[in-house]
Length: 210
Ligand SMILES: Cc1cc2nc3c(=O)[nH]c(=O)nc-3n(C[C@H](O)[C@H](O)[C@H](O)COP(=O)(O)O)c2cc1C
Image (cartoon, rainbow, N blue to C red; front, side, top):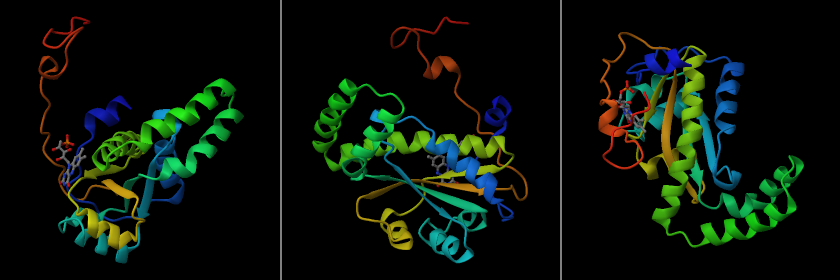
């Protein structure tokens, strides 16, 4: 995993060789194991592999060639209405795993109170947060399995909706291209020094843990 993280690059171009279904399953499973607030799992994924759909998705993604070249593109979405339908299922699963009744009763009220008051912008923020955790689980699992990956935010929301025939309540968060690198890898853009982005105890103080 350390190597996968250190050596991962946002892949510029893919060779298009298909992904065996069992590898795709591992990658998707990794995403579905991600944590989420109240375990509401508001993510939804559309896996695009057919040449025709990849071509159409490319035209909804500012013509980025890697959308069509990737072996699979996982379109990561959030469902703004998912919690309404899934609350009972989440509680049932939780009870099967040992969730205390007192927690279940409290969660039923809190989830409704918390989410029903969200503005559309707040809901998109909440969905982005959760979908990207699952997305990152998938990206890292793909890298560990030896694939190259390309996260993408360059797409048009309405056009992707149209191509994938998504329900109105869906919010497209990001695209994940998976496959094998074709040609030279991208340069390494580097990262800011730790003291630029990480603080210890309070803002502005350096972390002295090392
Ligand atoms: C959420 C997200 C969206 C991105 N969208 C695009 C994109 O649409 N097109 C693209 O070529 N690269 C995209 N990238 C790749 C970034 O440009 C890349 O991750 C960044 O330059 C750092 O390079 P590295 O990932 O190779 O370290 C995206 C990355 C992330 C995390």
